Image (cartoon, rainbow, N blue to C red; front, side):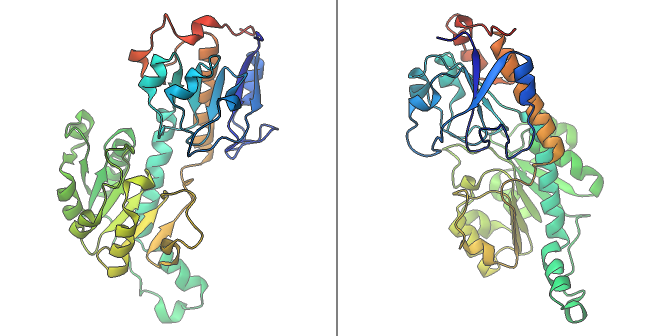
Length: 348
């Protein structure tokens, strides 16, 4: 085995030159630390992953949602670190990986503010009926329809946040100066941060019934897949808007489409879908009361800078046999068997 420490970049976000869909992610920092990098072969996000695709690498920077499993990493004994370029780790069990001696890291701190801002952006776009007013202006209907699509505003309205983790709390804090009432729902029904912000925690049905805007920030699990279903949309107000910046799999999409078509809810703004990418003829794209963005609304310059820094910090730390603060499932990581103890980055 070579003493060279090698990082593989997944092909769903980078090319062989190191150019990525996010721009410059700071690969020069790896080179300065004596770490090599290369592009991995294309790896499917659904179905089995060929272990040979990961041969010869110590770490992987994963841009998408490849399902790294304990069974897979068991067949790749050199691999010891998977660094997610983002916060989500759908389809990955960090505890199972840790038990195999592989560290999984993500970047929740770097993602929190850009993602909350994208939720606020979509909420305000709905509140001011931005899409309808744009269409009126550019289609020559100014004289006939100016003022026909008045917004509802946000002052005095109720915003329900589904999933009150770091992103949900950040969004609630952003909403505070706007004169809105914020309610939220999370799995535990408890949150010290909610108490600090004066956010009332309620059950899901109550949140649906009371909210003028529902914003989804929850993580996707097998237990909550499809939880936002026909009953949920039926409980929402006919004047309410549904905003999803989390995961498309949380939503029963046919139920959402029916609710939008029937007028059960006023509109929606979606940055996520199931599956991704959605089909070109997805019915949501033909609806005048739906704003669609390509699961990239939070990809700002700030996002790239902060996520890149967090990822590179983690990669360099693990190459030096350090477990970074962003490691998930660390309580299950047996440092005695951690693969990091078996290799040392020769460049450090």
